[in-house]
Length: 118
Length: 202
Image (tube, rainbow over all chains, first blue to last red; front, side):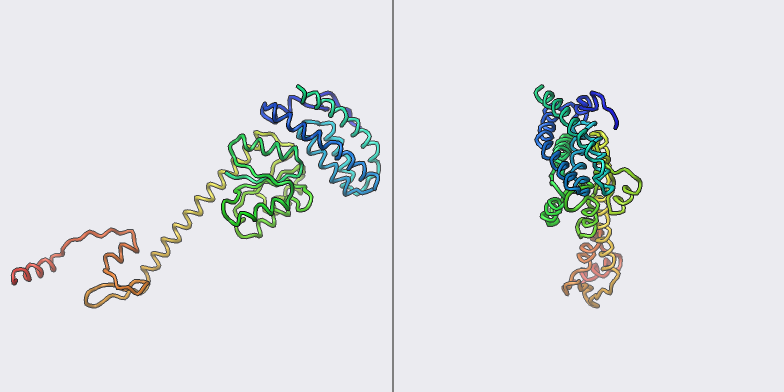
C-alpha cells in the first residue's frame, strides 16, 4: 500500500488554489465534506460487510470525488482502490483497505477541522 | 449565459456553483441526473440553460445516458454538454463523446481549465446562435424570392397585381412589400408626351 506525506493528507495550498484564494469558500467546502464523511464511511463499511461490490464501487466513488475536491489526496487514493475493487466485482481484500481509509479519513478530519477553525 | 450543473457530490457541486458564478455565469444545480432532467424539461423551451455540465457517475441517470436523452429530445439538439469525469481512458472518453457530449473535463478539475472549457462552449453557442439567426434570415429571403418567382396575376387595364391575400394592389406597393427595392416616382418620355397632350387639350 502506498505511503502518503503530510501534503497528501490535506493539500491546503492546493485547496486554496482550487478556490482561487477564497478562504470562506474553502471552509464551506470542508464543512460540507466533514458533514458527509462519516455516513460515507459507514456506507462503504456496509457494502464490504454485505459483500455488495456495486455498492462498494458507488460509495467509494462518492468519497473519492469529495475528498479530491477538498485536496484530501490520501483518502481519495484509498477510496479509488476500493472503488476499483468494487468495479472488478469483488469485495475481497477490501477490509485492510477500509482500515487504511478510516485511519486516513481521521487524519484528514483533524486537518480540515483545524483549517476551518483558522 | 445560464449553466446547469448536475453533480451528486455536494462538495464538488458547491465548488462548481461558486467557481462558475465567480466567472459571471448564472448557475442552476441539480443533485442527480433525474433532477437535472426535470429542471431542463420544466423550462418548456424558454430560457433553457445553454450549457450543461454533467457528472459522469451519478445515481439514477448517469451523465452519458442523460446526454443521449437530451440529444433525442427536440429543443436540446444545440445544448452544449460537458461531461465531468474521473474516467480518462480513451474508450471511456469515446463513449462519452459518442453519447453526444461536446467536451469533457477531468476531475478533480482546476478552475482555470474549467473556465477555459466553458468559454469555448460559450463561443460555440454564440456562433451557433448567430448561424441559426442567419439561416432564418436566408430562409425568409428565399421565401420572398420564391414568392416573386410564382405566377403573378396583373390587371390588363390598370396594371394592379393580385397579392397572396387576393387583394389587388398597385404594382409599386406590391414590389416594395415583397422585395428590398424602394421605388421612386418619375414620368417616362411616352407618358410625358401623352399627359402633355391631354393637358394641352384641356
